[in-house]
Length: 364
Image (cartoon, rainbow, N blue to C red; front, side):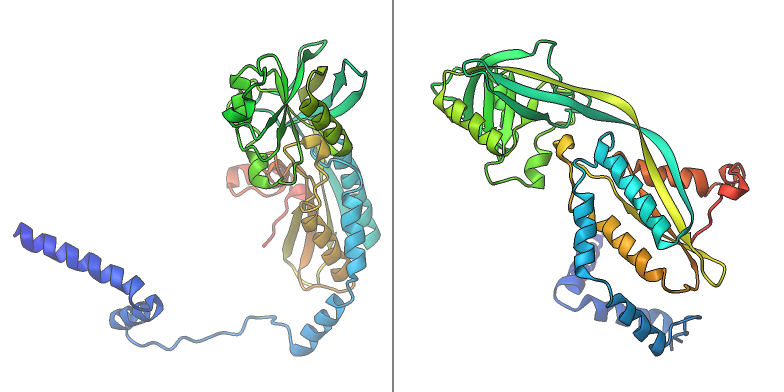
């Protein structure tokens, strides 16, 4: 009996595998459904309020008026203020710009809502080459969990060495203990090797291979004390030259602190001809493993598109009202959109009843 049972199980598994490997799964599904429920005629209903051909052509014509140069200018504007990471000046400038644009577009009831998040703020870092007196600006990397790259008051002193990609063989013949190691950014997590061998700090530079995967490798999910920094452009090349030449001691100073900082959501309404509300949302902040350099061109694409849509739709009278919502703190656990929903749209009746009626927002 057990043998028969095992045989049936094996047959069923083989049949299932063949249905998704040897044959077309869609046809198999259709045949099974016909056996179970028979042939049925599905009535396709017309969606109420569907746009006619003339209206669709009108919309296409309006969309065709969007100027690519205007899109580029808007995108360039967002990247011109420096870091838009929460806690940096560019974040505030972006919020102020969006608010002005909403008002100029003609959105109604333009509203800004302030909220607070906790973020690491780079207070500055620099490296002084003791033998030449040169001072090279540096940038703090994102903390390891909660451990920032902050150094003791007065900084640390060590010899500059070049650690290449951080393989153990790359340190052969070099005095790693007590040093400040300059490393290729595409070293993965091999900077841990430098710290294991006694390095006091690690400075990365762009060696031509900078991507998201490498960036994510440069901070850990545990609070390990590995002071990590970034050198930019010509400063990085000078630093690399000194490290390769050898024999140069340097003093490294750095401070990054966790702070409760203010940021803002901003929204405005485009009234429609009927009841109902649609929310169009995009975030405007940015993120980088080097937060002080988070200019975020890619991150600005969404908010740029939102502004273009708002400008175009403002020339129409939409059927439903549209709320254009620009949120911040996207990279702090979606704090911006969460704050908006917490204030205006709660699923639980208990909490919904406690939202002031004038602040309640119902949307599709």
